[in-house]
Length: 284
Image (tube, rainbow, N blue to C red):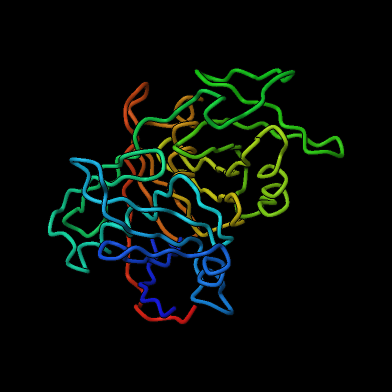
């Protein structure tokens, strides 16, 4: 099959965008892997399939696939790219959109400066939502949150804050994020048996109460230049632990994101850039 696509990036997190609003697109796991392959395909962290939504009051639906072919729940950077994608293709003229993902309905707003604000909804702290098996572990309480000891073998352990932003996250604080062993430890945390569906591993360095530096080792994808849900999870964890203010700038390797959270059941608002890189066709 011959497939038209748009390549986009949000803070360095890159995507292959597919328009299935007029006709359905069915892709096998092998075809999805081919699209995501940086040598034999287009190359991207994730593939986003944009579809019409059957739900009243919801503008669109999109599905998210990692470059391994696995379908996942949520992607904040992809949500921002989605807004520019549907507007640039003339699928909507609205600056405010409601979009359905696997497990959430997101509200998105295009800002006058071209950045996109995403209502990521409220964080979830119930361990069953990740899921996270905490049996037999003794957490350390800091502020209003817990840091859980996670054994990594060879008498090594890290302390992580665990929560869901529609997908599971384990966030740890490091002194120097540039020197942190993100690939080595990230792989161990991602596939740790206490996370039955794996987990995104965040490495957060506090620069001030209003700014952090962050690297994320994502499920099925490895380290990416930026992770929107990871930025939200890190800021929420930092606020509950008493380390951060309600509005935080997040420095990722791909660009700057701003995350705001008022605590409790309030939604997390993430604002950041999105850009079209190029358009093309590929034979699958």
